[in-house]
Each structure stands twice: as C-alpha cells, then as structure tokens.
Length: 432
Image 1: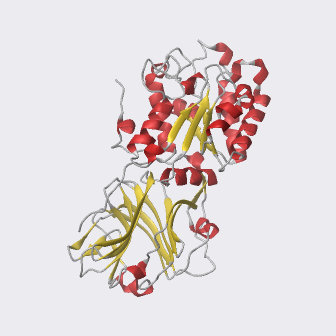
Image 2: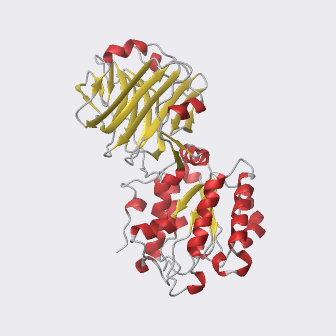
Image 3: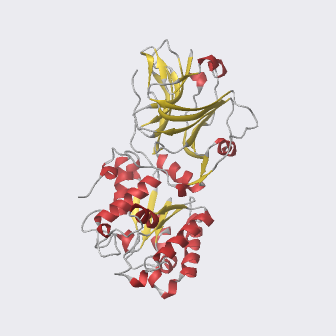
C-alpha cells in the first residue's frame, strides 16, 4: 500500500496549555453507534479486531470519530482506528498519529478522497483525545476538546465502499494481509457517532480540555491562511548584544514556522518588536505602534526583567499592565490571541536590584490563570532543569540569555506550542 505524505513536527504539551480533567467519560445525548473502552497497551505488533461491529459504520455519510490515546514512540504512521476493505488495496477510512501529527484519510481503491494532517503534534506520551467530525460543511479535527483544523472535504465511512474489516492499532488490506501502520502506546477508547457532536459534547468526551486560546493557536498553525506572529518585550526578546551573533529565540521560532513547516506557512510573518530596556509601562504606552500596527494573529509578551528594577512598575502596576495588555490584544481586529512568557531567571549576586524577579514571574502565571491565557513558563523551566539554580552557561552577563540560552527559550516555546519535531534542524540544534 502506498503511504500517504507525512508532514513535519512533534510536540510536548505544557500543562499551562490545558485544563486537565479527571473524569469518567460522560454520555452524550445520542449514544455512540460504536463505543469501546479498551485501556490497552499496544506494542507495534498487537491490535484489536472489531470487525464484528463493522456494520454499524458502513454507509455513514456524516458523524464523529473519536479516539483517546497516549503514545510511547514516534513512527511514520500509527493507526488509532481503521475501517478497510481487506480484499482490495488502499480502501479505508483511517485515523492515525503520523510522525506525531493527527491524520484522517478516506480512500477508495487507491483514490484519495481526503487526506489531511495537522501540523501540531500529539506524540508526547500524554493522554489526548482527538475527534474528527464530518458533515456537509466539511471535516473538522478536534484535539483535547478544541477545534484545530477544518477542511472543506466531507467524506466519511460511506465514501469507502466494501468495508469489511475494523481494527484498532492497525490497518488491513489485500497488499498487507498481516496488517500495517501498527500503533505503539495506549489506546484508551475509540467511538463513532452517526451525527456531528457539538464542541461542548466533544469536550465532555475528552480526557483533557485545552484552553480556548491554545486551540486558536493550533488552528492558526494548522491553517494555510497567512498569519502574523508578533513577539514583544525587552532586550531579551530584542535579542540585543548577548546572542553573540547567533539567532535569538524569536528568530529560531521564525525558522521553525516559516521554513520548516513548509508552504504556505512561509507566508506567515514573525515580527519582533522587543525593545531593550522596556517595561510593561512602555508597552502599554506604545501598544499602537509596537503591536496593533502589525495586525497580528498571535502576540507574545515576555516582560518583567526591567519592571522589577523600575519604581514606576511595582508588582501592582505590573499586574494591571499585563491584564490591560491581554485585554487590548484580544480586542484587536480578527481576534488576536495573547501568549504570555515568563522571563528567564537571573544571577541575583550580579543583579541584586532584580532579586524579586521570581515574584514578577509568579504574577505573570497568576494573570495567565485568571484570564485563561496560554503561558510559557521559562522561569520555572530553567530552575527545574538545574535543581533550582540559575545556569550560568545559559547567560551572557548573569541576566541576558546568551546564544545557548536563547536556544533553550526557543525550544521551550516550540514544545509548548506543539511544534517539537526531533527531525527538525531547529529542534535538534545543539550548541557545543
């Protein structure tokens, strides 16, 4: 069987992107026509044969296909569930995790009726629920309770005639009578409804629910519509001086999105309006020319390192400014998405006037929680990775990240936005 194309990327989901939920699956208003709670670990050879239930799916022109899973490896193609014709080649309706991406395809004897993949990644070993809804309006991927990709094609089980096999963790056809695209990891559940579930119903059926803004960022990443990404802040975001000529973290992120994600994402633009010395007061005052003028879809703010040493931006003002900036970003045309990033920790022996930076990082966390903003917590990440110590090898002067520090910032940003791929040159980059 000819393998469909697989795009780039893989991701590790940060806890701040989602609201984790511990619950039993709740029943929707209409019972599923197929609902199997498997809770089974698959090793790349094992599978579950559900062929006895294939009749419930034949002929469905619309509906919802759902799977809950957690991967333990990264492979080119790993089947979550596949309905196929075992007597012909390339006739199937398949939901896969393909090199980390979610993939849904419908084929009839080699004719591809639809085949779509996300750019965002879900092979991080954490539990995820994916739901694919198909109606006359098109096909929508939902990940962890949020829509992340919509395409106009509208093919479901009824578009692949002759379906005679139904398998979890493998695909089966005449060219591969023993199966192919085996899965490794846990598959907790697979289910199919003969109607399109609402977003709230999908959230109810999901083991975790992402923040709405996380879903919006994923949608922008998965869309072919060009988008403007804007990063702003102080000298750290500016990338001034201490990178030593290497890329700053916004530049690494730009390479990941504009080049490595391929066309048409190279028509996205990543704009850096970080200004050395800036505080939140400065950004509030110059919001129009540093943010609004560029009509961004996503706005990242990393501030606090100068606020902590500026009398005019004490903790209360810093908190109020962050809240205002989030509100102003969301009020921009086209519904821009705010993204908050805590600054890296610094060496307080060299910068004693900034010894309270951790308090400003905590305020940033609190504002993110209060306003349901996606947070990338570099401050905690650096300390946790170095047993609570500030790593001098990542800093140029005890405060500003050097070229190694900027790469660490970039990789954390890429991972938390579900774009990490070990095959990516940016993600795999190491600085000796």
